[in-house]
Amino acid sequence: MRRFQVAMPKSVPGAVAASGDDFDETKFLAGGTDLLAEIKDHTQFPDVLVNLKSIPGLKEIKVSDSGVEIGALVTLSELASHKEIKRSWPALVEAIGHAASPQIRNVGTVGGNLCQRVRCWYYRHDEYPCLKKGGQICYAQQGENEYHSVFGNRICAAPHPSSTAPVLIAYGAQVEIHGPEGARTIDLEDFFHSPEDDVTQENILTSKEVVTKITLDRANTSKHSAYCEARERDAFDWSLCGATVNLQMDGDSVKRARVVLSAIAPTPVRRKDLEKVLVESGVGSGALEKIAKLSIRGARPLEQNEYKLTLVKAMLKRAILKAVKG
Amino acid sequence: MSNTTTLTLRINDEDVTVAFPTHHTLLEVLREECRLTGTKHGCELGECGTCTVLVDGKPMLSCLVLAAEMDGHEIRTVEGMMIGNTLHPLQQAFADLGAAQCGYCTPGILMAAEALLEANPDPTREQIQEALAGNLCRCTGYIKILEAVEWAAATQRGEDTPPAKESIYGSPHAATKGE
Ligand SMILES: Cc1cc2nc3c(=O)[nH]c(=O)nc-3n(C[C@H](O)[C@H](O)[C@H](O)COP(=O)(O)OP(=O)(O)OC[C@H]3O[C@@H](n4cnc5c(N)ncnc54)[C@H](O)[C@@H]3O)c2cc1C
Ligand code: FES
Ligand code: FES
Image (cartoon, rainbow over the protein chains, first blue to last red):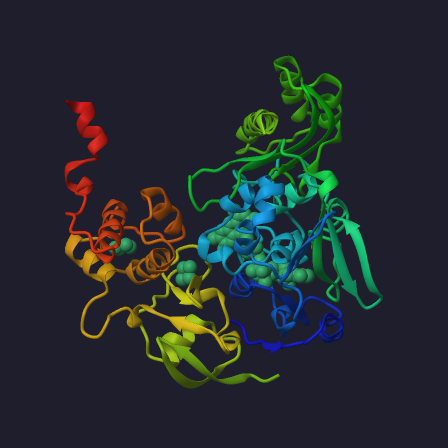
């Protein structure tokens, strides 16, 4: 692995102060399960890793009457085994259960999961100077694109790999970000940006900004929530397509809905059009067919990934039926 | 900040003071500085699990953590499994049942299985599969590994049960079906 030094700040402002003006200077280190692999793969070249694990207070899960605050450094295992998360945000536990392996979940953090880079094999290969690395073309457009995006893929076709992001968005999560100007809180939905915004980064963070916590409000959860994903292998595999559905129900009718698709576009995709149909038409078989049909409108499958359209429809229906059951 | 780190690592209940390049992984330091070569280099990217060690009792991938971060943590490797001169029940079961062929995945699988049995002395087949989901084996086909973990668990619980021989005779379920 390329040589680097490690800074050990003791506070969030200390971490911000230790960070450089671009990502080649410094990268924040959380669990390292993605970052160290990137350095080995020669896709990142930081001179200094700013270790967030040396900062106290970022590893806590704080439960209150209104909801829960999850420190960015909480590991995926800690999150999925937390009693209150299991009780009140079950789709999150479901999604984490399928993500990576037990070893990786023991180290990988929720903040790192949201900030992880794409898994496109052209991006991860040092012989392909793709758009994400400042190059001129997206090799996946005409290349091996079996696992790539079917939506929003005109510039870069790498799908966003996070399994927690879609579920957290469906639960209305907010993220707290610290930077040189202090702290701000935004909806997680607005955290990710598309290749049209900036193809070289998947989220809005600058090299000097740290995610410190994720907040979930009880008002936005429901026992009628579910996450379903399709994989090639049963265990230890990336999602090919994920659907998260979070419904507020009153008898058979849907009062409020959140629908988020994942692994099929460069960002997790909230589908307000489908949410509207759920509220207006409910969850009967007619409505489900309508939603399935509508779900793939605007898709642009590449040469090898048209099968993902079938998965989008199937995972959506599955997640809706599972959510209704509660 | 410096290019070299000197630390006293706690490995298999012993303190070992080592100096190593700051950017080296725990896997590199275990193998190169500590000469503990039981832990294997595989993919180096988190995909195979053969580098699994226990840190504070939890399975982690030594290829994806920095040794520089191991201050104050308890590390266990496959070299720490034997109890005196006696093989750990898991090691004994793997040897007796032929749950290792080339053996390259074995140290990692033993560590993941040890952590499982520590937390859950009587795991179901499904729980064993889940605990070993991050460990690839290219030789055995996994069934013998699952049988060995089940047998070792039974031995550790003090039960004198013969091992399942599904890998030889097929699954009991399939046998009933055939009758
Ligand atoms: C084989 C394999 C399979 C996997 N399968 C899945 C899967 O199915 N689903 C899934 O969701 N994930 C999967 N992952 C990814 C894994 O979940 C992530 O690597 C992990 O969650 C990243 O967390 P980390 O703490 O290790 O992050 P790091 O590796 O430490 O950081 C990742 C990136 O985020 C930045 N970063 C980290 N924390 C912060 C912060 N608080 N503020 C600002 N920037 C930050 C880092 O600078 C770096 O760029 C898999 C990984 C592997 C290796
Ligand atoms: S060598 Fe660490 S997971 Fe393969
Ligand atoms: S015994 Fe050869 S890889 Fe498992």
